[in-house]
Length: 199
Image 1 (cartoon, one colour):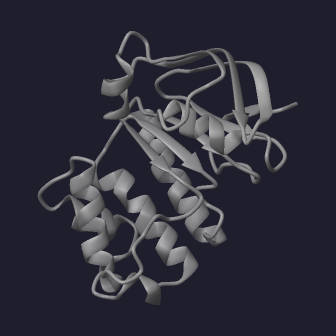
Image 2 (cartoon, one colour; image 1 turned 60 degrees about the vertical axis):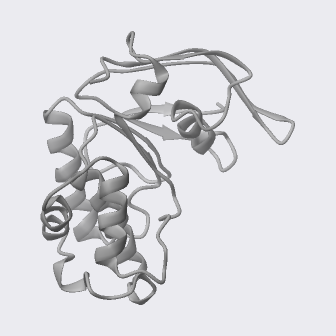
């Protein structure tokens, strides 16, 4: 379990351009934070830095005394692209990602049922709509539970009904002590603190 995410005086650059500096942010169990800001402000880069995929120019990202390598085993990073292989069936893709993240047993089917994906599991991913693909990507959060969700525009392809339904799932995750840090342009369908990047 990650006790918290603590960011102190963080600065990030991409392509030789500084995105932001002196960023301070703290995320505690049961809390959601919505990262807002213009395109290119650094929202996605911040998520990737927390996940250990890019190094900050300066500052610190800490996980309440948990070593970064151990903390990465307790987080999901879901990008704005689904990261799905279009030639696989939805079943194979969900099973692959579940196993990759440490899930086991009937977890893929349970997650698929929660997101109304069971009738679609034998279809190739390329035959799914954008909203169905996003639900398939989101299913890995449920199939291999981890306390920290790093989400990049998680609900953008979903219709109003599914935004509301996944908002309830996010609320359940928070109620169990989970944490959510999401880069968004539209408000999350749950109570979340807003942090503007690059203001």
